[in-house]
Length: 245
Image (cartoon, rainbow, N blue to C red):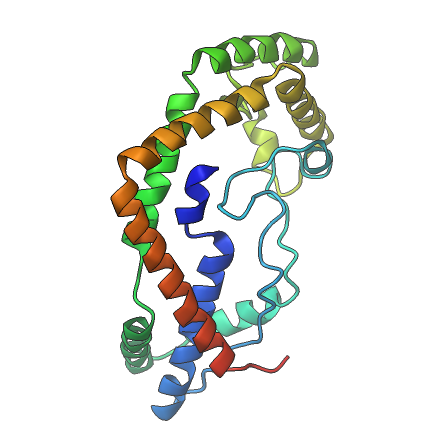
């Protein structure tokens, strides 16, 4: 999407959070606390259910395996970070106060950019919501609903955007996707494609994002520069604070 270039991706968020931990580590150790940040595979942190800008992906393969559930993260060091999180939670009040100070110091090196990132995300969400009411998208949604009727979802909504429906919520709230959930999810994906809904929504969002880019060109240029500068700082911190496996 056009606004993606100005968005803070999930991979960048992960790198930023990791860089903060790496800056906190020597600060905490200097204060006498054990704060061993685990090694993290920064190339394997995104869940398959989302793209880089955290947009939910709908494919037959994902639906067949996960239904409407979120796919597990492929990261192999998750357990190490759970243990690390437990040790941080067990810090004394004095230790927690020290950590807050170390975190403030880290963020002085890597300035927060969440306000700008949230603003861009808001623009993208505005385009998405407006796209849902695009004439071609609404017509395609009607075809999608006709395509889905044979599946037998009692409370089938008028738009794929409202899937899974409330009647499927019990399945979706379970730890693992049921066979029924997977069947409905696969049909949903196929109907989004065959009805033209997926393509119509994509094209509508693209057009609307271009309009928003033109309307906010100056601010987006500033945000883009800020993101690049911030990413460079994060890369430098990670490179200068190596962590062994």
